[in-house]
Each structure stands twice: as structure tokens, then as C-alpha cells.
Length: 505
Image (cartoon, rainbow, N blue to C red):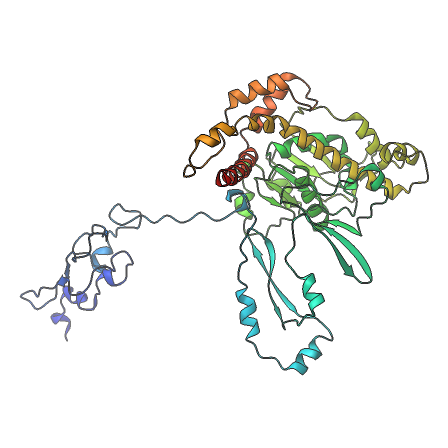
């Protein structure tokens, strides 16, 4: 074919209709389209027609005579009103998830079924077990956390060994043998229970290496040493946690930040944690750009970091806690940290928070005495004994246990006025009797005005600095996502009890 025989419309001979490539227009079939041939022999663009479909099938309006050649000029984008809108789902983060509910049903272990189909000679399995018992495949579940998804090669257990692998019971105490010693493991009743607060008599015999509470943070090294430079500000830190204020925790190692973050989270129990907490957060984390940016941090976020990069990236955060202790405090040189991070100096820094509740001065003296090694004063106050032979390390353990028990009691006192008012929202026996079995019973709506009237009438056992500060504190508390989760959980408990009572009657 010569150059003089070429037509401009010849390009359309190899041109496919855009309905064959676009997912939005793929519903147009070829038989429903018609083609025309011009007098000069060139093929024009097929004209799509609207096919006859079922009434329930909603087909978006499509502009006729849409081809690749025409689309080079103006192609309707997916955001155009002509095409259906498709919204990208938001990423799943823990701050947006619902309260974690105990899973009653057992999820099938599909991975284990696949591993059981793999062939392995018995003599080869015996050689492998000389060195290792098996290879465990651990998966992360949003509700349950780390879950063993499969073990290869499959272990053949004796009946007595299989008994040790039964499903745990909430609140149970297990005795586990490990390297010739026996470890007592205490399981919590629920995820928001603060476990194992020994009395003063039992605390003197408590060994955190032999008695482990499953949901409590590790007690070694002693938590008191992590907050040595912020021990006088722990009451402000606790208030920020309860009010879902974002908090950045600096440390020297992942182990240090992990222990501190888990310990701070434990202080809030039984209030559920509504934010997003990361015991060890790095720059390589997939959520780094979402959690650390120039925008104000999300409510309730709790990050543990070791990289000094976050000191500049999170300079606009209002609350920063740096772990460890200071050393060489001379007026001519900048103090260096011993056990402190490379970022900010150890201590507590807050730009906005002003404390609402008074400190426990007696406990503060006990903590300072334990940190300074005053065995005579600390022993008599923490353990109730008059002996001065107590080891200094044991005094630090006793002080850590006393500190944990103190804030647990404060959290309980904090929700006492809320629980008192919540009891007035439970349907009375007369209302339960009048309600039919088909209509579910539930709590009455929470009313802020009525709650503050109850708070003024009954007060609070927490030592607030003034009545106005108490009102301001609870006003902020009622706006936090943590209170919303706590109220939702209480509503589920009450509805469950009322449903059982309604079924029995």
C-alpha cells in the first residue's frame, strides 16, 4: 500500500472498543453493538447499545461512541459522575477496631491440616527430634494475638502430655515445669483485669521468676527503676493515660520501651485501652507515616521508641516520657544519661497538662527511699516490718508492687462514681417483668447532666485538688474513646444478665 492510499481512518481498523478493557464498561457485549461501513470503505466506531438485563441489575449510564481514539482527548475518569464511584477501604488499625470479645468458637487450624499431609519418614523425624521438637508456625490474630498455626513434624503426645495442652480456663492457676523448676502461671478472668497484687505479707515472699501473671507486665527489671527520673510525675502520667492523651516513650532498648509501655497500659485496668499502643516502634514500620507526621497525634496513642529521629519528628507532641536516670549533674556540663536514651534527657515533659488529683506524699517518700537505698525507712513502710536486713533489690521490688497497687486502686476509685450512676440505668425488676421476651432489655441512655448531679451528691474518693477540677476532669473523661468502650462493655454485661433472667422467667 502506497503512501497516497493511506486514510486517516485506517487507524480504527486495529482499534478495539474500550468496553473490552475497562472494568466499568465490560458489561457491554459484542452482539449488542452495531457497526457501519462508510462509502469509502473505512470502518467507523461501533455504536454500543444498552443490553436488556434484569431489573435488579443497575447499569450505569454510558456515553455512546466511546473509543480509544476519542479517549485520547477526554476520557472519563473513575471519579466522573458517569462512572460508578469506588471508595478505597480505610486500613485496619487497632485504634478503629471494636472492643476485643472473647472468642467462644474455635477457629480451624487449616495450616496444621496442610502440614499433616507432608510425608516424612519416621527415622528422619526421630533424627530431627534429637535437636528440636518441631517447627512452629506462629500467626498473628487481631483478636487473640500470636497464635500457633501449625507444628511440623506433628508431635505425638502421651495422654499425660496432651492434658497439659488443653484449652486454658479464665482465672485458672497452672503449674508448668521448666528446666527442673516449677512456674506458677495465673490466667486473668478477662482481658481488662489487673492481675496479682499481693498483700504486704505475701509481697515479702513474692518471686516474679516463679509466679507469673499472664496479663501483667514483666517485673524484672523492676519498673520503679525505669521511671526513676519521673517518679514524682507518675500521677500526671496516669491522668494523661486515663484521658487518652498521646504519649511518646523514649528508651535505650526495645526491651526497656516494651516493658514501660506494657506497664503504663496495665495501670489503666480495668478501663479498656481505646487507642493504639506500640511497645517498640521503628522508622521501618508500615504505619510510620500514618502515626508520626506533622498532624496532631491521634488520641490514646502510646509509642515506645529508641531512635533519636522521633525527637524531632514528634517535637509537636505534648507529652514525652524518657526512661532511665541521669548522671554527672554538674552546672558546667550537660548531664549525660546512664541507662537513658540518646534522645531527650530522662524525665517527664508536658506542655499542656496540669494535674487534677493530689499526689500520695506517703507513697512518694517510700519510693524515693527505695531508690536511694534507705533500707531502714523503706522496709518499715513497704513491708510493715521493723527489720533492716532487707536486701536493697527486694526493696525496689516491694516499691514497684506498692506503686502498681496504688494506681490500680486509683483507677478503681475513678470509675466508682460512673458505676454508681450506671446502676440507676439498669431496668428495675418491675420493668423486666413488663417487657416481653421478644423485645431485648438494655441500659437506659447515659445522661451527662444526671451523672454530674449524682457526682455532686455522692462525691468521689479520689483526692481532687478542688471541686471545679473534679468536674473538669470528668467532663474530659466522658469525651474520651476509653469511656465509650468501657460503657459499651458494661452495657454488654448488663444485657447478657437481663437476657438470661428474662429467659428463665
